[in-house]
Image (tube, rainbow, N blue to C red):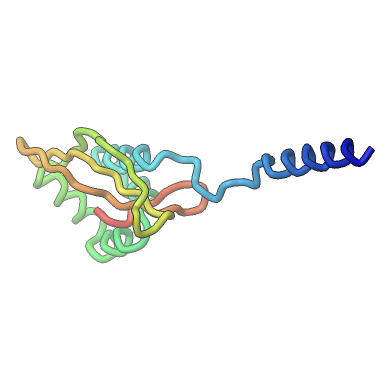
Length: 127
């Protein structure tokens, strides 16, 4: 009888430990947010750009104004050419670093875009 209780208790503990407690990590893909941001630039959609920014990046957009930022991107011929990698920032588990290839006219540069968890999604903080 005691053995049966120990086994049942063990099964109960195993079941309780395996129940998902809910993750606080956003479900959205950080790379998707970067793609959407560049699509918003191409479309000239300031609201969509703003919706994907947070922290210092949003502050700079507010300082410069969206029209000026769009002109700057256009002058440099900036376009997203690809996303190579998404990593957790080793300094902060709520941040992701997205390694991107960005076209600047005929040239291509690799840049790291920093995103931070924001609710159920991600926001670009540093470009």
